[in-house]
Image (tube, rainbow, N blue to C red):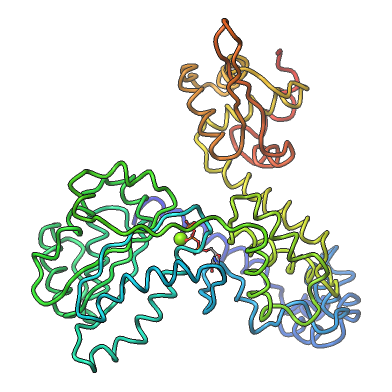
Length: 476
Ligand SMILES: Nc1ncnc2c1ncn2[C@@H]1O[C@H](COP(=O)(O)OP(=O)(O)OP(=O)(O)O)[C@@H](O)[C@H]1O
Ligand SMILES: [Mg+2]
């Protein structure tokens, strides 16, 4: 058992023990009305009766009760319950407004296989949330529908296989994942095999299909960034090693720069056709939301301007449809929790705030010790009223923070790199200012909200205690 598994087991055991000790005795059950069967019974009664029962127990406030009361007040509900998941990011809709051109382009490249030809490789790029994965998975669904028709016409069938390279970001895991997707059931490639043997088995598995295999390498940048382009090189040259089958790749990335990182020999063997996904504008996002909301919300559940507001916010965030959908779903959930009869503009604004907060806290939580110390330094300057500071000023306080926590500080140059990373993550903003003949300097300020940064740092075991007293007493 690994250390992490042991900790998990310990944690589960501890929780289990807590549940056991919290279980009431027979006597408690009778007096509190909180025993399992009893709770079920009172829930079946009206919510106000539940409140009466809960009064006088150790619970001051029953959150379930508030929720039930809200539900009771609302007529019809906000969501059509059976369709609630249609707004989830991993749901692939049948219709993808404003992506007809890209869909057509991909289908027409792949259609070469319908005439017995070998389709070109495809390179799909565009910023995040522009529908790249959704469109390709939609094409995959269509390919599945025509497979038997192609076989019926005596053509080599087309088969599409999807791999997310963020999850399989080494040559070994990528090859074995593709191989396993093609293995007959129960005959997975053993995990201890050397790469060479995995590759040979992969060839056999591909050949067994006798198909034109369209291999989708989604988020291919994660593979190249982590392990270089060796796996792509191998896949780009796989066809001469195959007998009956053929492979075409569709590489998808939100970072087109990876194309320039690839070895010229990989580029020349891939020679893909490019399909570019432009970012959505507010109007397009509105259409997308309207389409998806139609089946998700009950009639009239969306107040005036709600969809436009979500679309406008997402348009400012690089035209990301994922953000637009997330906002609408969260706004609906907030309205539902509050027992409102409609989703209103203020619910969207609250959803926006909640999403921003969880984004900031999530990013800060994942930072290294030194990056968090840099964030704390910028935060400390901000609450002291210095809205813009230089790298040197950030560095001074950063060193003091390291001193207080007994860590050796990094060099100022390294801290300057960390500041640039924080800029990319949307936590800090740094602007290079020219000072004429005195050269250039950086002006740094917090990009995330002060409250969100505070919320993220206060729960940190290293930095939480510093936020109160020490930061205020620090000399600037
Ligand atoms: N035209 C569209 N119509 C309906 N839904 C869409 C459309 N475009 C994107 N979406 C939805 O937006 C979300 C994000 O899309 P998708 O995952 O395809 O983005 P992506 O371009 O692959 O982003 P990333 O680069 O981050 O992987 C998904 O839920 C998808 O279904
Ligand atoms: Mg994607």
